[in-house]
Structure formats: C-alpha cells, structure tokens
Length: 359
Image (tube, rainbow, N blue to C red; front, side):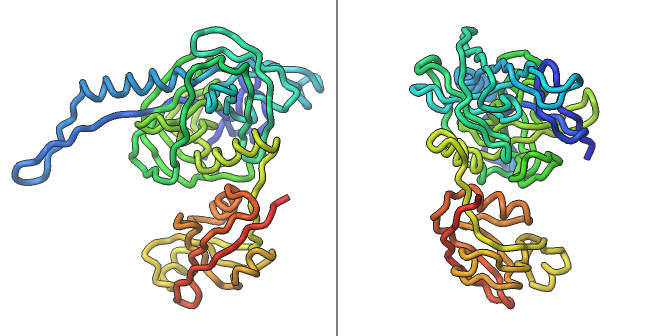
C-alpha cells in the first residue's frame, strides 16, 4: 500500500510513517426505494429526487454539528528543532449542552495546544483540549457550553458491511462544510500508523483530504459510525479513506471525558492468525479467528482459555485477525464480562471472561 506522509504545514503535523497521510472527512448517505419486480430478475426503481432530498437533509443535519479546528501546537522535532506549528482539522459535537467535540489526536497534538474552533455558523470560540489518546488517534476538545445547538448521536459501526452508504463531513484543504457520499469499501483494516496501536479501521471511498481529520463519518440516519482519520494513494488521487469505528471511539471518548485517559480491558493471551489451510482443517466455513499460542494473563486463565484454542468471536462479534482481537478487547473497560466463542479440538464452546486492566 502506498501511503503518503501527512502534511505538516499548514494543516496537520504529527510525525507518522513517511507514506502516511492522516486526514478528515467526507462521506455519504442515500435512500433507495425498491419496487416490485414483474417476471424474471427483480427490478429496482431508484428515485433520484427522493435520494437527493434525503441526502441534502442528512448533510444539513450533520453540518450543523461539525466544526473546524485551528490549532497552535508544539512540535518536538521540526526542521529547526523544537518549535510551534499551525495545525488544522475537523471535529464534531457529541454534547451540545456541555460543549464536547470529538477529533483526532494528530489534529490537536497534546493538551497544551491552543485551539480556536470555527462553529457551523462561522463564529469562532476558544477550545480547550480535554484529553488525548494517541494509541487510537482520538481526542476531545471542550468549547463554551451552548456554543452549538446541535449534536450527533453515535451509531453502531459493527453493523456496517461493504456497500453500505456513508457520508463524510469536514474541511478538506480548509474548504469548510464539505460533504461527500460514498460506500463502505471494507472493514477491520490495519494500516501503517506507527503511533496508532489499536486499529480496526473502516475503509470507505468518500472523498476526504487534509483538513478532514476528525470529522464524522455517518450512516444514512445521521449517526456517527466513524471518525475520519487517514487516506492512502498517490499524490492527487483519492478513493481509499479510513475512519476509526464508532465501537472503539465511543468508549474511548467517554473515558477521556470522565477519567482524562482511556481505560482498556485486558484478556492476557498471545495469539496467531488462522490461515486458510488451518481453517480448512478445522472445517470452518470461512477464514477467521485467532489461535491461542500462550495464555499470559489471569483473566484468560480464569476464563478457561488454553493453548491451541481458536478464538472465533467476542460478544457475538467475529474476530478476523490478531489486531482485531486486541482492538476489540480494548474497547471494553476493566471489569467487563465478555462472552468468548472458541473452537477446541473441533468442539465449539462459549467461555466467560472478566477483563482485567491494561496499563
């Protein structure tokens, strides 16, 4: 994958792999009206007028809770040593009464950054960085209470499938109030972001670019299913965009607001991927799950996990790789009881684990 470096000036500035571009968003949303078919293959009537009206209404609602962030932040390693740089990105309001805004960590830097927030009506207010989580590239900024009248609800990213319509909103290249429609291209993606440890990205094809980072990715109901974070591709070419899924973002954001830092669950296993050949030997209907190489922690031991077990799902959500298990477990706070579906010697079992605390 050819990933580009995130631009430093005047947009975003965190150091990342040389091929990565972290961005923020644009998106999609639509309504399709099916009709009864006659003979032969069923026909589908697409009402363009209804589609256009629904999309316009969706964009209006999302734009009313989307903001732009102008950030003055410190840079540890610049061309002339440490100094201050200007950053720019997007964000969205999740609590209009208290003034909480979600964005990316790479947009704001650290809690000492100075943030000016442009509201949907064009007015500017001062924002304070509440807390950050570099390992998921998320951050929360607080603006004066009541500054924005609208907020966006969280949606369930786990119901997304390739082909589902989504809308991304943000300020690509500082063009504020930009919306874009597209589809989910893939789920459970991992990309080369050295600072982002927990990855389970949604891939989508709506246009986003520098300045879109931190903006919302919404479903057709206007619910946030992702936080727009990165793109890949050749210079000047778009089409592969990534967002942090709401399943991960929602819990992290709540912890950042309530505790000032994330609280991540811990299971305690070392695992390896299930190959196509091994899946065939196990008679799985598809390639998924991870094989336990070693039990390393008390939560896994008490749950009864053993070396050789194949973990297939956590709380009825399929585990499709090593990174996905770690990311999924990390979304639950310590003390949470989770149901783990395993395959042990060709016998399916359901175990219950009480998660510990990951330092």
